[in-house]
Image 1 (cartoon, one colour):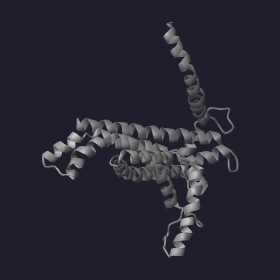
Image 2 (cartoon, one colour; image 1 turned 135 degrees about the vertical axis):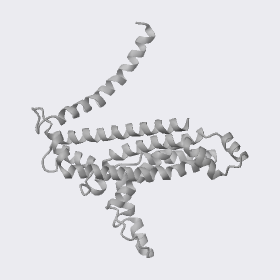
Image 3 (cartoon, one colour; image 1 turned 45 degrees about the horizontal axis):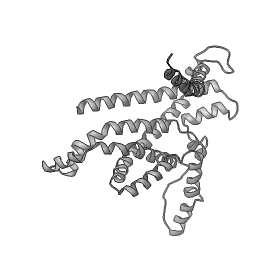
Image 4 (tube, helix red, strand yellow; image 1 turned 30 degrees about the horizontal axis):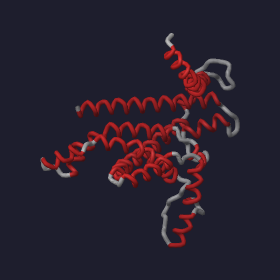
Length: 280
């Protein structure tokens, strides 16, 4: 073996070890555990039968898919306009906005839920301020489905902006100038040229947002506890055990959740390829 190849192999070994220990081993352990009886020891598919036949777990998947799709759709629509607006700002302003967006995209989990409780909870700053000013918030409750969706959109939006921002630079100024010379308005340009060029990137970003929301646990649990039936919360309850732990059943739920995410990513890949093929 050449010296250069040997050094490359030595450099790859730590990364490979990290991947095996922190990714492959837990995944294999989870899949193996999902085919075990409670307490382990015997091979069975009873855990999957229970998940697929129990309406409670079916509802958890429905709720998770619904809130993930809704928050991803709202986030991607807002991010399309926000990312474009950032590209039109001066360079020094754009750099500061991107730094803020990057920081915001990493602000999630328990700190995010606590921040929303402080601001919009029953005794939150904005809630009390609105009462003092006589502003009626209507039926809005932070600890409701609406409040949970708001938190999901909050951590989805900056991530979508960071992912969508670079694709606007794929639209060349010459295209806009050519469209103007041919008499096309700005609206026609974006509908017939700009948006089709952006669609593959938008579809890819949507799939990432969907997967991000499906796996979100800390924010939802910190805000509502076990009030709302979501798959990550059910997995956490089965692993930690509110009364008694059933990690094997939790593993089965986690495997089905992973299969749902893989199916969503494959569907997105198929749609992206179809869009690109229609544009070519």
